[in-house]
Amino acid sequence: MSKYVRLFFNRKKKATATVAGAIEIVVCLQRERCYFHSGHSVTLDQWENGVVVNHPRAVVINEEIQKKVTEFEHILIAMQVNKDDMTIAQFKTYLSADGGNRRNFMAWLRERINNRPLREGTRKGHLTTYKALERFGKFKTFDDVTLQHIYQFDLFIREEQTYTTKGKPIVRSQAAIHNYHKRFKSYVSEAFRLGLIKENPYERFQDKRGEKSDRPHLTEAQLKKLIRMREESTDAVMNKYLDFFLFQTFTGMAYSDAKSFDYEQHVVSIDGKDYIDGHRIKTGNEFVTPILPITRKILERNNFNMEITSNQKYNQFLKGIGLALGCPFPLTTHIARHTFACTVALGQGISKEVLQIMMGHTSIRTTEIYAKLPMQYVSQNIGDRMFRVWK
Image (cartoon, rainbow, N blue to C red; front, side):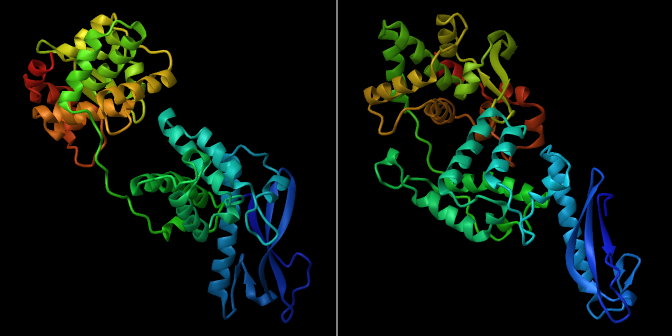
């Protein structure tokens, strides 16, 4: 029991051998104290050294009182984490009249998303979940974080309709729905650990991860058509976007990683071949990918500085390129990364184990030697075929 929370019996001096007195929980903050009824009263001979004795339900009563004390201690921890004023008035904002927590849950959630040490790409995903919770609209207080509402939220994200889809349900895969719950669950679990909610409803929620869907990618024929398109183009702006997409395609780098690429900082030489050795902005995982002859041509055309000024214009440009290539799917920056994996690497016999390191993927199947020696492992196992084919 902390120095801020303790038990007090018979404060009003009414207890006798036959008359019960109240057991209260007193919270002391900044020379101010407040008494909360524990819900139990006992006689004088049933209270000794801070616990209930000589009572037929002594064990149960002591457990219930201790549970309430623990809840109060968790609230104090939450106040410290949230940098609240350590006052009785602030403590009471965490409690409803019936002892529940009526504090604004969404405000707390937004604050935690902003303050967690997340990478910006990850934070963006968490904010996407936050906005979906806002649209759902039923998680207003901590008391609203219930199993029933979580199941309702699950149905909401499966059937949500917005103006962006012209009244049709947004098509979300089971894997995407799982990601919404995975992000939200981490905050619900944190709230439970801090004592802001009395139970963790996600412990009883049945969620499925979902099967990974096929990743759309350019075929070898489409990729070579794209290369010819760049060679024949005389439009400076178009060439800039084409080169950036091709650079992503032949390195497997995500948009944010490619945009932050620095040749002097990230390129190393092993056995006469150059490799990009970096860490993914999204996850922090190390990745190692070769600079193929075609990649070097792209770098040389751009003075080894891969840079585009507008992501929005880049995406608009890719939509047009996708139509020109006859793609049955929208062309996005992710397609470049998928094309590297499926067409550039796996299509030329590179093993999945090597590809995993080249793309900086996280997987439980990764062995310790891969994690410790990624540069040596990739340089020794990719051979010369990739360098011969993609010139």
